[in-house]
Image (cartoon, rainbow, N blue to C red):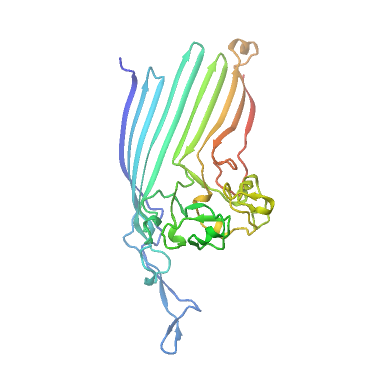
Length: 398
């Protein structure tokens, strides 16, 4: 006998368009007069004459962006509908994306950017959801869960020529983080003298040391590279359980994300923000300090640069780097609800149809690797923190 009570296989393919990025006059060219103070100079005497310039280059063949979408799925229920599973896989090829043509040389003299159907990005992933419901006598239980993974890859973005291959963003997810790779903190002056010159303001022992990927003796924009995931998670999941026994019910729900990073900074992470007027915080106790007169030397163990009153320090905070990136994955106990419903006999004696009392807790626990701020927060500046909420409720029906 087959365990399946329902089985369905699905597949679909389609092409959709998007013309929201095409302005009303995108196909037309426009000329405008050169304003006062920007006139053309001609002749040996450099006499000034007023002229016209091409303020917009029309693109007569521009068309809507296209998205080729493919989806395949499976739905099934087993064991007399006690267990259900749904799986979906999807793939999108988005071509003819309307973006600025960065490959047009500036010597052409085009005012502003010329947008055309020159971009391409693919996106794919999988979604899974399942639940299982059963009972043992008067004890009923249900277990459920869901999982989503999605990743996009930029195939063409009109990226200008990069000095080195590791500088290029093409071939990585759109939301990827790029910047400098760090190699700890400068130990002393000798460490600075033996290292490549960093072109991000002044720096001293205790400041961040960056890797010279190009091996040219300088740390600058040519040393930027892929640093990993962006601040939008690729993995989103949740699971929970619902229990019922003789009028008592308990529901527990978890949620989580993965493949996500966030940059620490701003008022809640950097010291003395803003501009030397702010505070220092407990994680600054792990700062770089070398004070032999007072017997303090944290050069080997420091996890935070030397403290500075200079506000937005150029070397330590100016360039985007992996030093401030943190794994923002988390698992949160999102909610717990415990309730009790009066039995039918008690309700009848009270002339009631239903009476249920319950208590709910929200955002009770979070397991993450950041600690100092909520990993789900969209900013590291000043923002209202996520609340832990407790609710006592009563539902009555007459």
